[in-house]
Length: 118
Image (tube, rainbow, N blue to C red):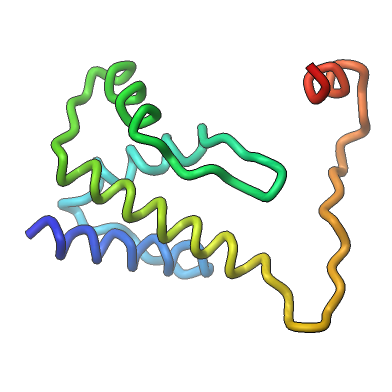
């Protein structure tokens, strides 16, 4: 049952990321919400986003006082894998096409400089 729900959640997430109006199955709303909150809090490194860790999930569960069962955690990690796959696929360019590095529209301030170098 959970494997099917996990597949449905991953499919809905992929459709959502590609601009579709897909909604998660009703049975997976709590997992969908948990993934969304965890994904918004994810960390990044120079090459892109880090995966959501089990430590992140546990800390979120503790903060929200919401226990998740192992199948729920597996669904969240499967959704994260789908999210990361989409992230990396949509950022790859066609072969032979040069890409400029991403640039922020935010002006560099002393506070941002301190944050980045400390």
